[in-house]
Length: 201
Ligand code: ADP
Ligand code: MG
Ligand code: MG
Image (cartoon, rainbow, N blue to C red):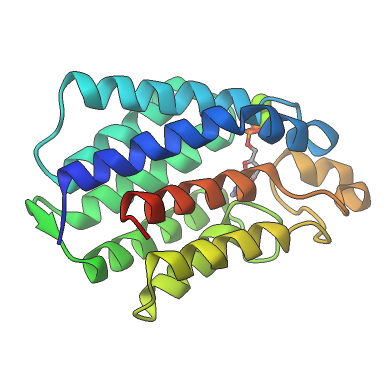
């Protein structure tokens, strides 16, 4: 079973890895965006960890709802509301249980990812964060491990390179968006990798 401590570990591990990868996330956002994705993620997850440390929520759901709120209020641009919605809706779907199972988390993440698709209007193959998140929740939902979800998210992020962007800033470039890995899909793979790290897998 996964307790609130596990979910705080997940958020901390994400903060550490987006901090470490900030320059490369921003470099990915440079040819097909406005070169701020690394700093957006860094600022957002620093705020998440600071808030969670100050007043640790008692339940898994409350950890993710608070984290999502922090992202929405500290990150401007497309990724703040999208990641904020992902965590907030995943947290709401977990309810107020003290501990949740891996299957509960898989189902809740599916709800969160669906909310991202609804908010942003993107479909698979549009070269967005969904191209990493959807394969990850598919892998997890099939009774798969966190490690399998991580591999699926990594492969999904890499698969965005030949895609033509249909949503977000990169879509303004049309054909010129082809040949670059999507920054948001790349940070989503970091989020899923951190989940696997938090689980020790
Ligand atoms: P901004 O583009 O506002 O500067 P960021 O650079 O922080 O925001 O985030 C860009 C990332 O957000 C993209 O790489 C993409 O993965 C994701 N994104 C943008 N628009 C959408 C959308 N409509 N649906 C899903 N993801 C999106
Ligand atoms: Mg940007
Ligand atoms: Mg921006």
